[in-house]
Image (tube, rainbow, N blue to C red; front, side, top):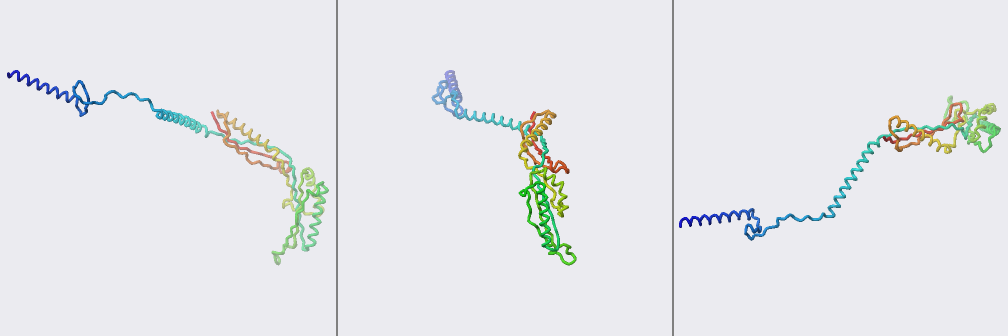
Length: 287
């Protein structure tokens, strides 16, 4: 009896131990689940992996937009770097064009002054000298509409002086007879014979603009041609520079027409003019 009791005790303890083991295995961690192997009735969540869900359209579109943005940013960055490499490479050149032309307008101011203490006599002398000048110009072939006489200017030199400081002549009377003509050759001939007026008693004031002024007025007729030639010369200089430096010229970075000047060819030929234009152009350089 003792042996039987011992076996039952062992078996009973073994069953109890097994049940405790299964209880720890199936119910460990406090999570309840259903298992036939454990023989327990607890419900458990499914342990199968979730089914793959179809991709969301908005997510795909956003990803595509991000990718396109990165591609565009890279392209613009590359173009910008190219601009940085080439934008600061340029050459500045000047182009010159000149023309020698004949003046087509003469402006000849003939200024005279007479003096004396008698105002009436001074005025009469001024009128006589004016008539002498007009007669000389008419004899040279210039019509009256090309001759202009300015109003006379009277100066009383005693008005602001006293005693011994007064000049010997009280009155000064002056005017200017101006010839304005396009007959340049006739004006040059009259200039050579201008001593005849001095012989007639006319004292010309050469220090008050008494010399003739020769002008060229048809600048607009030759200006486009001059600018085109100056620009072409500037480009030729740029191409030569680029060839010497192993590069090529690109587009125009900036251009400045410059100032067109008209000057006498030399001191002895004021009726012959030199028209000059200098253009400044900047060209980009490229490999």
